[in-house]
Image (cartoon, rainbow over all chains, first blue to last red; front, side, top):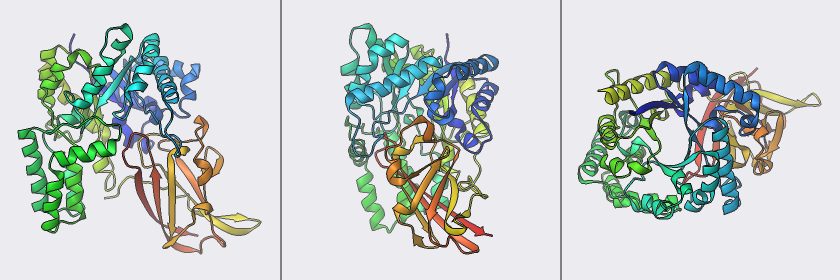
Length: 352
Length: 131
């Protein structure tokens, strides 16, 4: 068995938004890249969610397409909307009910895991594990920048969910390759340059990022207050000091914009993947800009694939193209070409 | 170069009641990547030609049903999501509607996906003509 390739429907969001691709179109484009897996954001690409998924006629179409395009469902991206009302957070039972709804939807569509977000309370996952086992769908906690493996945040989940008992085998991690960013993506730098960021400040941001990569990022601490956790993390990694320096030097809004943006990317040692291999059930192969020569601007494809090979990972790398958010205010995004290039880059790394 | 379109170019028009203009409407897409329940819309702020429209004068229509922003706070039905890539219609009560000619519209979409530490605010500007 070797590492397999998948594409997340998130990658084609601009095409879907503009009506160039519908759900079937997403599957068709995915198959063209040579990927054999499809990851789905049901809430993006299936109307009248979740009712449509309960409709047998819809599912017949879905499985027909999968067969036609030779695709295996990989991960179903769930959004635990636990603030669905503005006056309260859903109570624990309601949140478990919502997660079970997503597990059921994933199962109906043939997925073997759901992706749950970093904001998911541990108790909600624990309370859903029995049902996960019943329907045969794992719950994958996304490890998304600025969060990381081998951190108190990740350990908090393992302490509670890595236990004996078959249901606990239904919890795992889904690393997002944004945590292996060697630099701030070039499209992000360009966006802030267009907005008026000045070269001296851009250089300071890039140098500071490079020095964090060289010296190691301070990892984020576990807290359900994500705003609080984020600010602590940012300051522990030098944002406060840089902000003061920027102020002294008379930086403008675009300079601060680029500075703050740079803290949404991070670098982890790919060894983290090897250390946690028993818990990794799927991977978001995040990408921002894959060039014509099949190099990705930020994410360390070769190092991640090498670590996975060493660890014997035989799951999916699922392309999640996100560069469009830096482009779409001034140009039409070509997600189809970006995914094609990124899949080719993954193929070369896996087969090379 | 032009960015991704937000508004329906054919969606800007006055609305009438009993043969008299009583407001205007426009259609635009959600600036996010998935469909949402209307309940996570925290606000839609409309400014037309520099004039801020009071919240209670704004209506939102999806899938043929119309809600005030206050009502939208409790709309969670799968039938009335603001689907990704689809237009929602915003109707603004304004006596006499808009005069013929050029207008500038600025709308801020405030939505609060639960996992985000801060709500999203998307500024959506448009220049259009009323014929």
